[in-house]
Amino acid sequence: MFRNQYDTDVTTWSPTGRLFQVEYAMEAVKQGSAAIGLRSSSHVVLACVNKAQSELSSHQKKIFKVDDHIGVAIAGLTADGRVLSRYMRSESINHSFTYESPLPVGRLVVHLADKAQVCTQRSWKRPYGVGLLVGGLDESGAHLYYNCPSGNYFEYQAFAIGSRSQAAKTYLERRFESFADSSREDLIKDAILAVRETLQGETLKSSLCTVSVLGVGEPFHFLDQEAIQKMIDTFEKVPEEEEGEAEVAAPAEQGGGADGLGDQDVAPMEM
Amino acid sequence: MTFTIPIDNGDALKNAETDSQRTLYPYVTGTSIVAIKYKDGVLMASDMGGSYGSTLRYKNIERVKAIGKHSLLGASGEISDFQEILRYLDELVLNDNMWDDGNSLGPKEVHNYLTRVMYNRRNKFNPLWNTLVLGGVKNGQSYLGMVSMIGVSFEDNHVATGFGNHLARPILRDEWHADLSFEDGVKLLEKCMRVLLYRDRSAINKLQIAKITEEGVTVSQPYSLKTFWEFQAFHNPTAGAQGSW
Picture: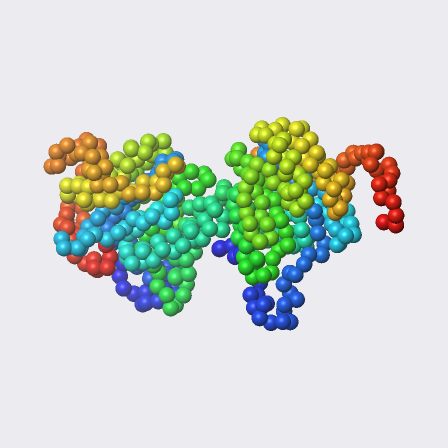
């Protein structure tokens, strides 16, 4: 995508019917570090890569609990993500207060999408620069949605967003048909394996990823580091070797190697 | 879109002129509602009377209505406020249906919504002068609850409003048990309604019994209860009281 004379304002259409500012906002999502979501008929797993800016700092929080039955993983401008998570928590709690009943996740994502759409149609606003993977329950079971800065939302069996997410998506595409009937443990394992794909050969350690689970009869919670490491140990016996199932993508696939700081031209606020 | 709880101008108290706009006393009222959980769902009984003070003015008022797919609402107290509540619920159910997403408001959600409405109005010193009974079935679970005009809200296996609290509930406490059949449930409700008919001056002998199960709502046609007036004490009512009284 190159600069052009129609991309200054979100309220300016291009002659080919595009809103470039919205598309640039979607680029910001692609620069953030990866977030992955998958669901079975009864559970949703959200996982993400944690990369701290430097060894001195802690890593950015990218998965948020919205309610006992809804969680969200973000990629892109994490500040925007934090604010939207707060909005989601607020909507959820207001619904619970009035109806003493959990807000169906399908309705929450529509509220969220409508909120994002507003920012694509006001000259004094900018689109949110964050993609959200919303996992939650409603009457018809477990759901996973992706909310886009454009104001669109889609339902997925499994999805990955952020940098190097294509590797994870490829892995998920091969396996997704079995997810609906997956057990909780298999679902978590697949999530961690998908995270590994985005690391491009870097050793998978529990300190590098955050995994969260929610399901029917299981409120949203994070898995602790030991549980994650145990799961990693079941399929990565020797750190250097790549085991059977994982497809090894060509090491030089995308720029910005496996060093801890990620791409050089990613702004510090984006992680 | 969020559902706004319907509230009106809170400045009513400050301005004497608008003072007359808040509810001070009821005008046309309905008397008791009696409701029980039974094997397949909930049964609710009410008479069809609307009193204007001590006059039994209206005799064809339906005080039990279906709400959405899963609930039944019965009301005693001010009839116009009941109609207002029905409008709010109509809007609520409409918005719920417009989502068209497989989720629907169950009796618990409706009960809690009504509790919020009643309590909010009470806090503004402008109550909806009703005691509401909300019953329903969703996903095999029966639900029965009550909200009063001051926002007191609770659930139970059997509820009654107004005089029913004093006359019907003792009967229900003794004779209600889980898994009543439909016939036994109706018999039990009729027993309560008969006592109310004898003893509540604002009750009329024209009642409806509504039933809600997983399949849906049925409201019976209005009918009357048999009464017995040939008690000895009624034959010569002034026997024990000589004099002008």
